[in-house]
Image 1 (cartoon, rainbow, N blue to C red):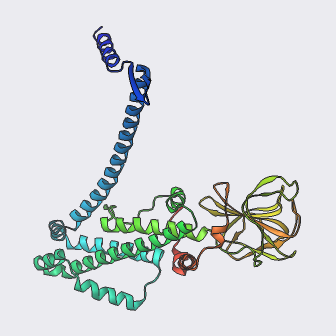
Image 2 (cartoon, rainbow, N blue to C red; image 1 turned 30 degrees about the vertical axis):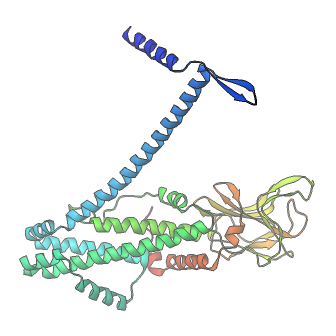
Length: 397
């Protein structure tokens, strides 16, 4: 009863606020009347109120998201500061120098494994330079520990060197990540979405790297690991993007987009680019990947499709011959077949498509990548082919 009375009272106040209003205007001796009904006033009021409420909700959601991200970063920074604090490290050394030595050896194993897997073998000169720089930048923690426990001086120096090396490696990984991300953007693609697709699919049995009871990774190494994983994901994404020319002929007979259909004369959507050339002209893979179709395809004739990962696929159609098989893994520049005029075709040419998550996109940005982008991609490809990395693998199942 009380709620009903309250509701009726609120309605009465709103009715009192929004009443029919009349305005009159005089112009050149004529009087005109303008009426604003109560219903119209209420609609305008409710619309403005709804818009303000939606804006406030969106702003609140963005603030919550920003606070969450900031909180996670601060938590990791605080965790790292706590582990690296003088009091924590002194207590650790005091408890057992042997345990600390074992811990540092495990950490060094992790650094060595990460360096070989993601970077490759470091030159001896670079290692000597790094050691000299680290010795000159011994932390305050190391000096205090050395003063308190002279027998632990060499361990404290080793720890300081490891932390400095991990931080420099993290900085280098972040720089390479930004270079790869910038190169991917120049292809007109979103690096965050593409790298997320590659990082979503991971698994395999749990085989602990650390031995003993302590399975926790040092915060500095945790930060380094995150930076290296993102770097590798973006570089592998960049390598998978098609950028090689599918044919040495430079004559484009039909571009991507709207065109007049060569058979019916009506308007049609052309989902790729046509390269005109003689029958038998070699057709090359625009990027490395796996052959997922090698055979006849309705409308396309003899066709080869290569899946490059992260939702990217290239299609080579109207071939006279096919030189690869389903399931075959290939590298960029490998000959897939020969140019022809099979399927729905008016003459010898290559129909080349690039598809992202099943939808055709314009191939031109991929074929017209500038020299800087191709250089970054070439460096990433060379690192991926490093013998050390090939032996160690990526650590994913």
